[in-house]
Amino acid sequence: MSPTPPPAGDELAWSALYRCVRTRLHGLLDVIDSSPLPKNRRLDPATFDALVARRRSERHLTDGVLAKRAERLAWVQNSILEASIATMPRAVRRRWRGSVGVDATPVPAFSRADQRVRGKGPRARRALLLTAADPDADLYVRTGGSEGPSPRARGEPKLRSFVFAYEATLVVAGNDDPTTDAPFPPLVVGMPPLHRPGTGVGPNAITALASVAGRGHPTGWLAGDRAYTNAVAEDFQLPARSLGYQPVLDYRVDQLGVQGSHAGALHVEGAFYCPGMPAALINATSDYRAGRIDETTWHTRIEARRDFLLRPKAKPDAEGHIRYLCPASDGAPTGRCELKPRSIERTTSATTRIPVTDELRANPPEICTQQTVTFPPTAGAKLAQRLHFGSQEWAATYHTLRNTIEGMNGIAKDGAYAALADPSRRRIRGVAAQSLFAALLLMATNINAITSFLRRARPDTHGTLRRPRRRRRTTTPLGNWAPTIATRGGAPPP
Image 1 (tube, one colour):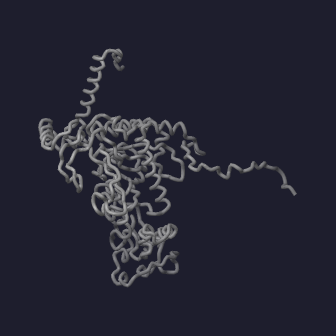
Image 2 (image 1 turned 90 degrees about the vertical axis):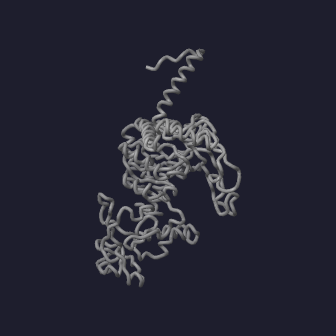
């Protein structure tokens, strides 16, 4: 049982109680604080560096100790989130099949930014005058493209807004079947410690995903914005696949078209294709974004790519290697090619004729001379994805998971809920304290989402609880005027 609180007018007793709570909190934070930086004072660079060196020496804060503390902090945060997930009924929890969205969002800090010498040029290169009172955070800068020169740097995007903040990387559970109402609420299921904005995009996401998988949750589709597409494959895409996740990615303009090859097969927007695929199909997305073709033509060409897509002969082996067949290889070929004579026999049902250029005919690559070729997991790893890019199934999965996490970001920052965007509600400094409080606020957000789902969900024809989606249109549907038709027995009227 908790002790009886002191009387309302006993200020000394309340001060002692506050001191006790503060001491216990800092005792907890000390063993999970992964930062050696001094807080709560704005210091000149020399004093700041001297204090950092002294703290590291007196408290034996080696890099190994700080790394271990970061692991503890991540464990504490995700244990808090798991406690909220456990409040969901088991039947509802098991409806989630592991698909998630990942995103990084700013969490404003209760501090002003560091002070630097005024002038032109990048801010980070200007001389530092005073450090921030919370030096674990940094400026989160949002930019936007514009016409004409930028007032900061010619040819670079204009500054839209900035805030002194941490960044939270959140993994949110999402529906992997966009055609039906979700049978579970969207929940934050994983997060790493808060970090400086724009740093460690891939590693921070993997810290959260590894925690989710390590707690025994299933793995499924993984959607992220283009920042994750641009991550280093060894930091994000390959570790994510090793955990069992399948990335669902969108691409920047410079990531469209042919982005490499293996054994002669062309890597185009996430998949390997026959080297004989026409240029119009290779450049379909580039042409669409440049306005050279309309959306209908783009979708037609995206679907036409399937005839040139390499087919897996079997599932990946234990090391992630997989054998692929070209469209004209034996075993129900999907294309006819003169380099694979059996594909053009009368018994072949394939209708697509693969064009063979003189160069391809003179120097056929490995994929054209062998029936199957083994592809390692590193082949095209940065941009690879299992869903057919641009198809309806890709669009439905990608946008559903992305909308889920964007919606969660909005709810968590709403002042009526967790108010994660209001630093005055978290008046304590340091990455450990801010990470811990963020996890507690997201835990409360999860519990609210579970409560709301259970209150509003209705069983479908199979008895599965689903929360109906809101009708966005405000106009009246035609079905409201449907007349009631009485049933009649016997023969129809004459």
